[in-house]
Length: 383
Image 1 (cartoon, helix red, strand yellow):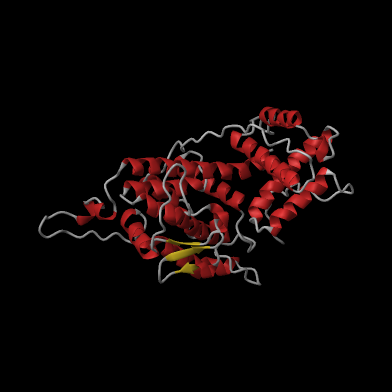
Image 2 (spheres, rainbow, N blue to C red):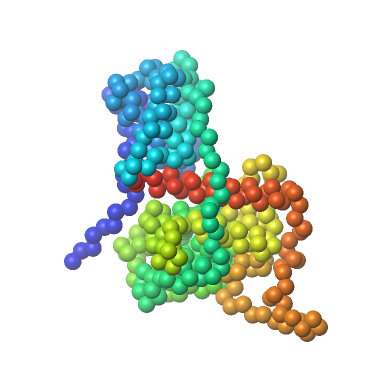
């Protein structure tokens, strides 16, 4: 019996050129082509197309088919519409979602003004909604993480893959989209690193990965991946049941199932990213090393940190991440008569300063903002 293809992210209502050269659909299509020529990331273009498709549909429903008909009061009406809109479950759009859609409209009219498609930019003075910068309500502790990692059924091919996925998220703190794009050759077992190709802002970076996560990935490759591959092999590291790359939205739902089963509460992939950063901070890691791992080129309201060497980053990761080592081997200090593992990892961190405290707060806020960006994608499935 043929397997039914799993439904992934719903098809986006993208805009296609229309018969009117000055019509909204045609101009939006030209705007997206403008972004492609300037090498915007596919994700950015997709998100822009998605947001603008809602605006164009809203305009068409009100007989507004040309950009010259759009005024600032009309845009303010659209902003109120977004505020009052309710999804299928009755929940309102989050302010991050509202901001995202209005920002796309503002960029669109900025492009039209620059290319002389409109005489003036009606969105230039549009006041954007303030997006709250809240920290996540909960971060996992080590015992909670271990309970989640123990949930997948290791006798099952999919369960073994999922254990390797969870270990990778926990060890590296990479984004869910970055994990879904990992290729087999991005893993360097000898050096204990992962190569993240074209992460956020299309930046490549290396991140260290712990011995335990490497062991689970190797086990998955040797015992499970071959059963999932459908020729020709796409070389993607983590594969779905049909041999396809994992979908980020589906991955979040899968992780949420494991978290709920282990802890009885709801959380997605990003909880591992935030947990990794928090545990390393508590373990004494310098803020700039964590910044490098997360792929943040800078942090708001803080100084721009210099990039650090991968060797030092790997050393910090091993010293501060509780799940970095395959097996922790405590040794006894002969003179002091104490377990050296019980001593704080002070050699890797300088005494905290006010600037460090501010950087720490901004780091956590930045992680929360990223979680909000993932929620934008997940919200679309519920509209």
